[in-house]
Length: 323
Image (tube, rainbow, N blue to C red):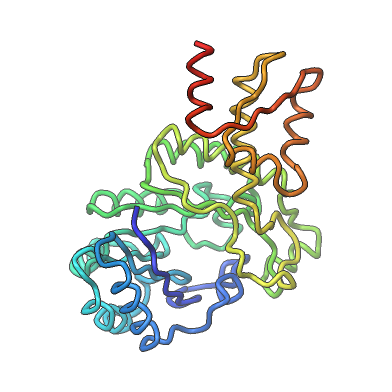
């Protein structure tokens, strides 16, 4: 797994503003100071000489920047890279074509993340994404066929999303099998067009529990397909006063992992038998005032719940003893 050094270019290259988006608030970053970025990247490279690492451009549509803008950024950073370094970019599916992919291949870009958000046509239209299912799928396949690592960003809870759109997203993940996945449940940010829809009652965000369940479903599928889920939840550097509504919590990723653990424990549970956990698993259940310990107890109603904390080696031995 590569170390990542992020450089934020909020809204840069975006052809239009999606109804939910404010990258400056999400990232907490202002416009990129290229000279300061070069100084910081050089230090990052020096401190990790033998490790695989990537310099990542986030927050905008990198491939829609003008050739001059793109080249200026990369030409300043490229001489700083060592043999273990490459670039990662995030971009919009409409701004992927053969010319762009050729350019990426010539400039040590190894990984391309596509902000798909949803594969459902109607959901994409309501969110102002400017493309449909065919364009989203086509961009993903083009990135893969050109030999790049493909990352996909999905956004549960977009306007118009329902069970059928969720099933469509699960279907396309099976078909495409990207290298990794980010899951950003939609929140309502003050000052975005989505705020007006929410205030007028035309948009209802997911509850926190619903978002956790949906993301757990995605994670289970990703695990079966060997897709790495590298981010769960909106970045925590957004100011709380900018969040109007939606399933935001700074520990969202922990909640999803705890939900996944509980699902596994439910499947493995045998009445009148203790549950063996290692210390990290215990921490997931006991954190946040025992939120998920209580959830586990509720789901295993009328059963004796006795959790025994072990280290990993002891846990494996106990499981072997049972068989």
